Length: 261
Length: 261
DNA sequence: CGTGAATTTGAAACAAATCAATTGGTGTGG
DNA sequence: CCACACCAATTGATTTGTTTCAAATTCACG
Image (tube, rainbow over all chains, first blue to last red):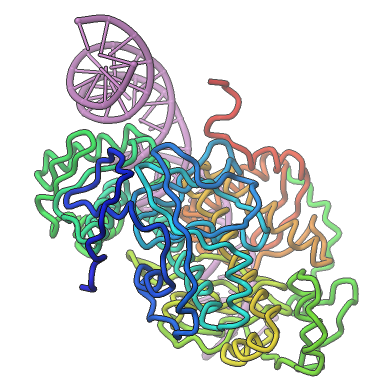
């Protein structure tokens, strides 16, 4: 698709981290240009005015919290590498996973209105994040309206993601939810240059269940069913998609499909 | 059995909507100031620069579609009066209701990124909407950054609303969902100066079910349960809240609250 | 090599969906 | 004005999918 990140020198500070398959050792770079950010977000590059403005990176270890609930919103983050989860606070009872951000996703846009985060974000793997200080973003926006557009589009995209989730939670069977989950993961991995056919889950069954509105047992069971049907080969955290087409079919509307029964 | 103690004068004109608090008699006025808009949105008024810029209104009849799915995004709308529904297209099978906007809510912010609407919005009653032409909003934003903030906050708020829905759909029982729905409606009505104790539903059981991720039968049944418990007196479209406190309690976490673990 | 967490699997309980029939309200035309 | 047709809403009986409870297995890690 697009020019993947150039090969960069891995530098001295190498930490042991299990990356997907062909890993991108971009530990070395600690600053990103606006151009790079736009590429990450798949947004047409912004007028050149902001050539010389750079954004700092930040590294996270698995389990580390990027931001917490109630915390003041001072920074947005763009995932440059790694896998995370965002969790919604206990409006009702226990926490719920809202998304599993990965490369190219944005963190923190909820909570702009209240001024403080409604969610928390936790790294599920070694992560590399780009920091977008919110105040700086705003002042940049005054000089260059395109940057405002950028924020707007990030939020709108976030909204679209929520819509997909709502649609799923309200309508679909457990099988369809899991199928969608796997297909989405697969496609996402493929987009990022990894294998879409074979990858590892970074999250527990519990977290998947929380995300999909199911119990961990149902997640496990349904995955086993997919295995039995030979659609997938899921063993613990490793996933292999054997029959993508059939899986995609399951994503549909098993509750009320066109063919009668 | 049921005490028909209601004093309701049935002969009223049910389609007319009286003004709450007699605050803004702008039936006649077809233009709104930025100040009025900020008041509607509960956002601190914006710097005076935009004194003389006015926004046109638009009236809708019940059933009328404000915008459709796939339609280019050229306008945002603020509800000045009336009740509507926003519906998500058939990503999977049939349509799903995403929200029931009323006075002070914003329509159309989804679809800013793709540039076209992902949802459609339909009036459920006589409506009065304020039009915010998107291009105009953007150019105003260049002159006055506060306006950009306004858009940002509108979107962030929308996002928060979706989070609440996601939380509900994934976690709560049918009773809790209906309880939340009624309580939210009640509070909203109260905020707008109407009675929070007694109001009319503008939507069908089907639409409520779609919104809450339930079937219309379950909605009807659950409402009947509330009636039997004497928490409410719901008869067709008319709602009376008899025991708000108990209702609020039901909103909690019926799946797993009493037993500690 | 043991310990504890994550996962798998089973059986029973339950909530909600589905199928189906009835009632209630509204509007139209005879 | 009443009778009919149509749509929304209620209620019942049954079925289904998912949760819950419980136990066994696998894996990661010190």
